[in-house]
Image 1: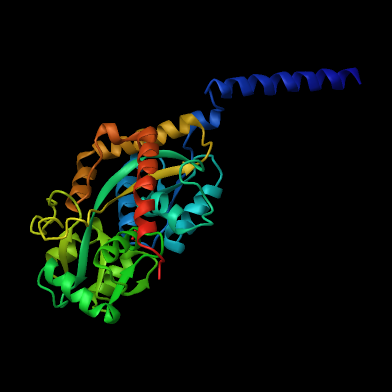
Image 2: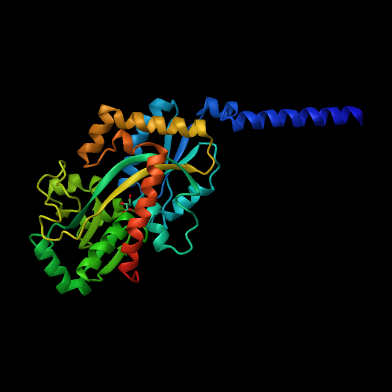
Length: 333
Ligand code: MLT
């Protein structure tokens, strides 16, 4: 009996010491040696869309820094909330992270009363990857020549028009909810598993218009396979210098810019979070990575907008910004 008590006492001392080390942030060796195998990045939309493209661009460089491949896993559905819920439930060992965005992290709480995650409290925030201004897009043979004609035409033909989006809670859904609210129209809305597929439908003429992140539309606009009527930011975008701002085009109320950001499950150890945030930071400073993001019209965050604390502040401010917009837009269908 004596021997067993001695062993139990030693075990308790050992676990106590380990807990002390963890408490001091000196996490177990696993965190110190992280990563020792590939890292899964959940992208909550179909391949080829903006979330997927940004995850692959920054993930390519992060893989070099971390010495392990970042493997994209597209987990679609429910406007991106299925994938983000999967990320919430993942183990907090740093080998499953996710690319969320304005829709999943800031609009979803107002759009899903029973949302299965809290964007702020159920995740550790790795950092902002890219800002993505919103374009008002239409199929190439849509009759209006400019935004003023677009407004008149959509108001006159709303019952005949199909608007594409990536599901309730997506950026494309939320920002066109704002546009339709401003125009006081309710077109038929056609959901897709991402704006990769929906922009293909726009190019094919199967849908009439949509609101999408610029990174998903630059080649198509430049190639003339779709039309861009305006961009929802104060300034024009260098990737599409001929596309007027919504203010220039006569619809100043339409101000819309999204963002994509990396997150990890709650209680992911601090040393792991620091490595992930540092790798993202390095990717955003890499010339080749910056070139790929800028060519697609991204807004690359400056140093003061990077890292977990800045992302937490952004998520909170964006929830505060978009919740009243969504409530004012009224019932979803
Ligand atoms: C969105 O509309 O939320 C995104 O563009 C969807 C996507 O990344 O495919």
